[in-house]
Length: 68
Image (cartoon, rainbow, N blue to C red; front, side, top):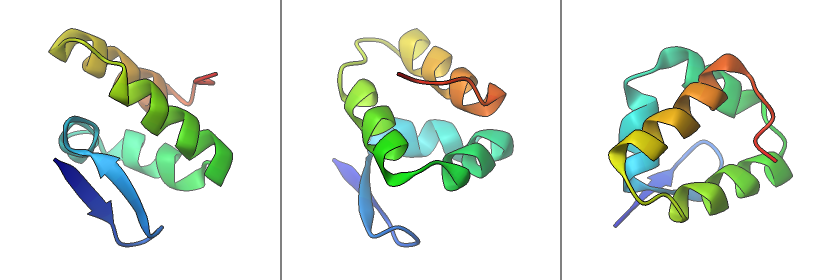
């Protein structure tokens, strides 16, 4: 299931959308990313195999770390 990101017209995987909804800083950093960076985050989130991995990905976004 996907969540439509109305601001960007893109689609966020549900786990990523829910996880970022709980972290305002992650949302802010995601909003400042280029379209390419957002695509990389979405691609990486689709490879996540556990809740812990998703939390780590969201923490990286929140910290402003490079996802590549």
